[in-house]
Length: 265
Length: 272
Image (cartoon, rainbow over all chains, first blue to last red; front, side, top):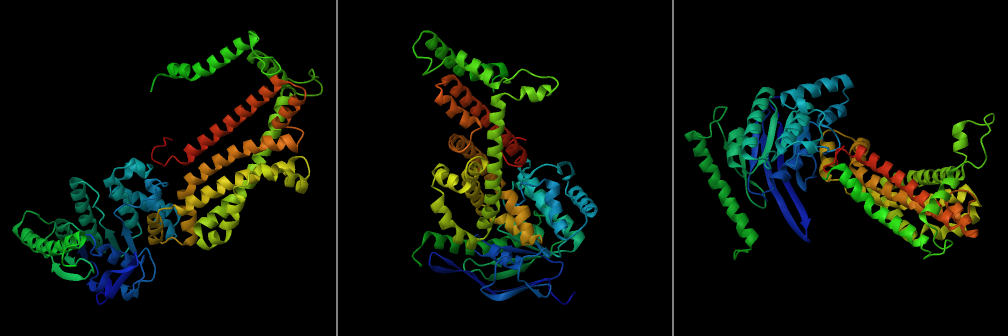
């Protein structure tokens, strides 16, 4: 399916009523993500990057415009666009193995096959020893591993990740970034990854989509043509980091003006 | 935590002191035995209450059924039957209705006003009607107990379903779960802590109601026995009956507590 992009967003607009006022989260987003591409949505909080992700996931109906995933218009959530949430969203009443099995059971796999798949994914994410634990007994990093295993187990062509490593400490984050990059390289999945971390986006993405602060639009798309695994200390990496930092800081400044209610308003 | 013998000593210190003071006061003649019998007298009455009424005839009955033929066991079994039966009816009605009201705002809108009007009426106020509608014996007792257990279970179930974190619903739908699966595997377990808390409260209410019901509509059971003892000024038997009710309620609540921590061992702060 080389012709069809994995994700195609056409003139997407998302507006919400908030306190009697209309807040435009996204205004006229046009975006294409190629099959097998790793794309990051980057911007300060309030730029609508999570809203865009939720629209692709099918949690939101577009106010205007549409979202196509592999040529089909998105109308509802579905396992072809499995999502990893920042808050992990593991089912606390299920063990690690049961959480990973959930999506497989929804696909209608038989018990033996579910068990085999769960075992393989727990192995792959170094969770085999924790199969019978409940999420409450795991650290944040381990929980996010489970959430990633749960999503990868259903083998979605498109993977949506909403600041998945945002709540983790720096070392755990780097660890999981490496692991994600490794797994992604072996699967050829399309990834749409939301972050406010400039370095994180450069470390992971083929293309970084920098967004504007409210209303959210695409400010600039920065291709990252660096060899993997990436070296954050290389001059090329840092040149891109400088460029992106300038873009993001502009929007951050608008965000702060907006929050403080400066004289411009 | 302190070692077990120390904790045990502290736990029984105050009750023991109260009983000793009570006994001494009675021996000193502070109270008339008719008004407040001594603990020793209560204990003797309790043993008599628990003992078989007739000597055992080995040809006619086994040892166990003879031991259980004492009034106390018969009364306790009667009360327990009513509590469990009434509770089962009340909870079986409240649970599906609560789940439906929690999950469907339209059902909630429809049912809530009526239920809010009925809820503050104590079940005991229904006694005259219950006797009118169901006559005497077990049926009105079942009705009153079911009514008493119904509202705590209902209210908690509704709250439980309404408090399900939306992120779990999103995650489940995202992984391909349909409405029924979301309900069965996400809403229900997520609401379970509330539902079980409601059931525990409902069981407590059932115990209150059973005693009152037995005092009015039934001629067996712990509540009936207390009232009967009052007719004869058997204060010691009244107290023996009260203590029996307390022990029975404590046992059931402890069992429900065990069940609760077993079912909710996935929760933070509850060790399984």
